[in-house]
Image (tube, rainbow, N blue to C red; front, side, top):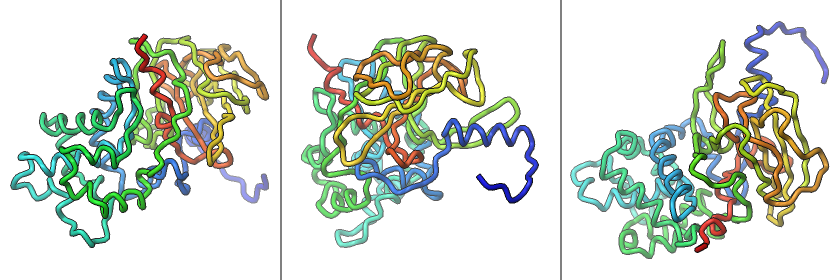
Amino acid sequence: MKKTKLIIISASAIFILLIAVIVGIIGADESSSSYDNSSEFLMSTNNKIAVEYYSNNYRKILNSHLKGTTKGYVPLFRCIYLYNILMEQSDFCDGKDDCKPLNNYNENDDINVSKIIDNSSMGKYISNNNDDAVKFFKKAFNDSLNENGTLKSLEEVCKNDDYNSSKGCSKSFLNAVYKSGFESESGYPQVLNFPLKITNSISISSIFNVKRIVNLSSESFIDYHSGWDISAPAQTKIYSACDGVVTATNNSQKENKQSAIANYVKIKCDIKLNIQIEIWYWHLYPNSIVVSKNDHVSANQHIADVGTTGLSTGNHLHFQIVQVGHSNQRLDGFAYINWSKYNTSE
């Protein structure tokens, strides 16, 4: 790298810069893949507020399903969109103009999907834990899952009597949703395994793309979470979510505590998709990595253990999927997991 100027930077600024570059927690906004275009919305300057309103209740629902009889995943956009439909058709919204965002559109209008799901008034009903709002939000999640935990298409959900008379399920609205990139008519390719054994000792502690305040010993700053955090006891075994090749490892941290650089493993998946994906496993326990660069690994193979190295405030796994060649590309890792295999009748 060429140096044209000598720049003096404070120690705290260097620390933050190292974290941003090496740990990779702050991603640039790039064009989205055909499977996850929602990142473009979530990362845009004017459309961040809605995610915050929904995140706590959304995480609670995810954890209840993770530990419940039907394990499954529904993207946050889907929950927000269907929640809007249910709310606008309920008695709760009578007399509340800001409670019916879909009614603001006529059939031939240019439908702004981002504006609909980023309606702060609708989000505040959830963040304030209004009973009716939370009930509809949970229903939107549950109505989107098949019995085996796989995700229904939006059109399939719209056939339900609770939705089919809404503008949000009309052909023009569905076309606008697909055009916006928030949903794909072909759905997500559910091809990965969950990286931990699903037990009562694990839980989702931070969701994908949620706004966070990161507190260091001397600094704090805001970032948008690039993956999923799964809390688990120290030294809980981590398993590869796919067949693939180890592209990088770091095991430099010898103590299980917060540091500038995390212990990590990166694995490029051997999966046929329209893009090539790599999975990053972060904050690993010291000396727990049992694979090396260029190793071929199998799905469900033990690769390392849960720790709290790097930018971390407790033992957890940071699970992140990126598009190979686009390391700042934000992909929703949970949408790629095949949840049906965790809903057997054994």
